[in-house]
Amino acid sequence: MKHRKLMSLYIILLALVIASMVGIKRSNGSVIRDYADVKAEGIIRIVTDYNSIDYFVSDDSIEAFQYELCRAISDLSGFEVQIMPETSLNECFKGLNNRRYDIIARNIPITSKNKDKYNFTQLQSWVLRKESVVLTDSLNRWLQVLKDNGVYP
Image (cartoon, rainbow, N blue to C red; front, side, top):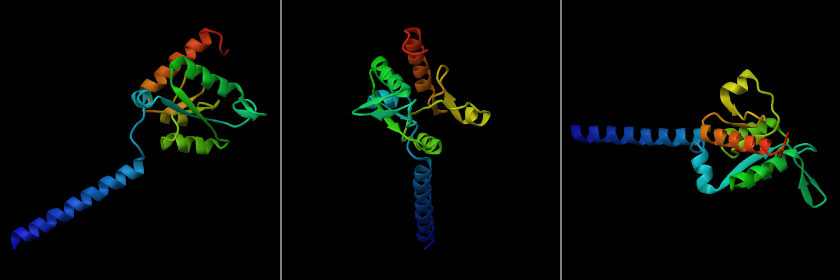
């Protein structure tokens, strides 16, 4: 009888632990995505603003500065770049936080609040998750190569 009660208690505790682990997984979203994950998938997911400076459609072609810079990053890195336009900065940050995007390619002011939470590239105010250290370093190198070769000022 004592063993049955003890076994029941263990089963209940095990169920609670499993339920807690599932809840934690759902609240945190997916696992950390950094350079190794991008390399394995071969895709960098970038979100940018839909406007005449960053990204826009003209007739049957896509144009603008951020779009051209993303394409140059793709050519240099060898990764496919998926560019998704989003006009809401809040939605960009939500997508970055839940790992829908790897990079926000917009000129974003670097505030102390944002700097504590996110990584910013050195040459362009692009934003990455704080834990994406290797991807940030790689992106900084690619941007420097593009700048050195006159691809952008």
